[in-house]
Structure formats: structure tokens, C-alpha cells
Length: 305
Image (cartoon, rainbow, N blue to C red):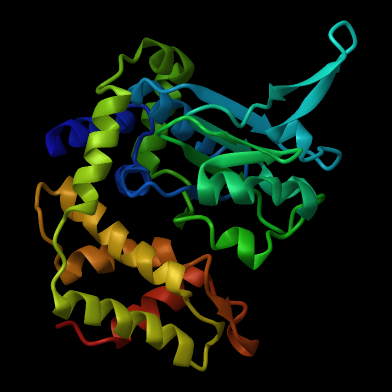
């Protein structure tokens, strides 16, 4: 199963050029049953990554374009009155797909953003006192424009903490961008992709990731990293217990992609910046620093067992 997931990484990398690490971290997030936040300027390839992942995995794909006038019911669905039968019936919203692209999530108001909280945390939707289960697997990829751009609302910490990892794609390397310009056929390549594995195989891989072994020494290392964020003078708000769990699960997924059934400190280091960057609130003079830099500085300060 690990080899199948490696093929997924390789197949997505054929379309999303020059972003091998980003692709691998995205797949690790999916294996850990988490959700992904992509934060960057428009046109970098965030939507292409989401479309390619869904196509490669053969999963149902849904796109929700967030706008300032969107309501929570536009995401979850609503009860609709049937005048003929004099009854209400639930009409499912676009959230009822296996892979959801929540595009430009921070263009919606905080009230609308909160409609995703239950979906991401419990894989279900509650409407008018009734609960509806979402399909499995369920994976949200949200894109966020930089907060400096016009018409954006910052995501509250409670919403940010629901995301397993946060990534910046950044500009591609010059060589990769030249390859992209030479073919200009990303959409056709996505449509031509065949699924690498089935949904039930992905669910099995997720179970196998949770079974990857972690030693007491590795768990102590994770706690050292987490507590370093809570005690640092650079950090106003450190990593939460949910974030600590994400570090362990992310390390397991990274080890699984390497074909191992046990974790090493290097696995924690590989995923830690992406797991921590959106959970850290820099303090005072350090707010101008990129959160990745703060996370990497803290990681280097913790002794490796």
C-alpha cells in the first residue's frame, strides 16, 4: 500500500511541477485524515493541486468558491419545503463530496467560515436538529489569499487549528516554470489521468498509517518541540494539544510514505513546519517574521534524541 501512495505522489508531481515536497506533504495530510490549508497568492497552482489529487485518487470532487455574501447554508445545504407534500426535505450542499476545494476561504465572513468546523472536525453536518454523515474519505483543501489583499477576513484560531497542515506553494523554480510554459496543457493532463487507487484502498492506507509505531523517546521529542513553542519569547500562542497530535500523525504518514512501519525524529522534523506554522502566533517584534521561519528556528533549538 505504501508503494501505491508513492505512485500517487509521483503522478500528481507530473502535473504540479517542481513541488515534490508540497505534494508529498499534501498526501501525508490526506493519509493522516487531516485537512490542508494552502496560503499563497493567486495563480501559483493551488487549484491544480486539488484537482490533480482528486483525479489521481478517483474521488468525488467539489469546489466551493467563497465570497463575502455567502451563507452557511450555501455550504452545508438546507431544509426545503415541498408545497405538494407539505413536508420539509434536506437538500445537500456542495460539502457532500469526498474532496472539497474551499477556494479563497478567507473571502467569506467568519460566520460562513464556521460552517466548516463541524464538517472538518466530525465529518458530519447538522441542519435543523438532524445530523448527516459526510462521505468517506473526506478531505478539505482550502486556499487562502494573503490577508493583505483586499476583501479578506482573517481565519479565527479555532478554524486554523482544524487544519492539519498549512503550506505555501511559492513560485516554481525557473526550470519547472519553463516546462509549464512549454506545454500549457495542465487541464488536459488532469482530465487524462487515471485513478492510481480506489477509495477503499485509501481508507485501508489511512488505517495502516495509524498503526505505524512511535517510541517513547519520539513522543518525548514531540513534547519537547511543542513545549518549546509555548515557552518561547517569540511566541504569544503556541501549539495546542491538537497540534501535538498532528505532529505525531504527520510523522507516521511521512514514515509510511518512506515504506517504514516506525517513526524517526527526522519524520517529525519533515512535517513540523507545515503542522506548526498556522498554529503559532508570533509575539511583538517577531510578528514580521514568516511563521515558517519561527517554526524552523524553534525546531533547531530542540535537541534531537
